Amino acid sequence: MFVAANFISALAYVLNYILEAYLWIIIIRSLLSWVNPDPYNPIVQFFFKVTEPVLYPVRKAMRTYSTGIDFSPMVVILLIIFLKRFLIGSLYGLAMRLQ
Image (cartoon, rainbow, N blue to C red):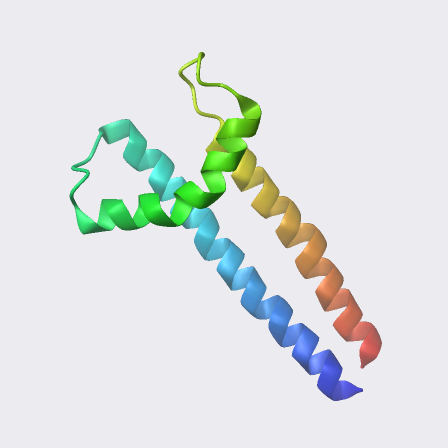
């Protein structure tokens, strides 16, 4: 049973780092929107390509186009924090119970 516990613990560990990295990518993308960078810059294109598949559905569901303020990064950041607390915590707890 310890093999399954180690697998779940490792999965939780990797997911935690992936969610943390994506959280920082969302934050950097939000900061980039304030300075209006060169859209042909490969780094800027990377941030937009990585974040837009997640931000667009949230932006579409919120329908805040008329206000001019985009709250979708904040919603996604809150969702990432929730997933880190709930999902990662649950996986670590399950791994501890399996040992």
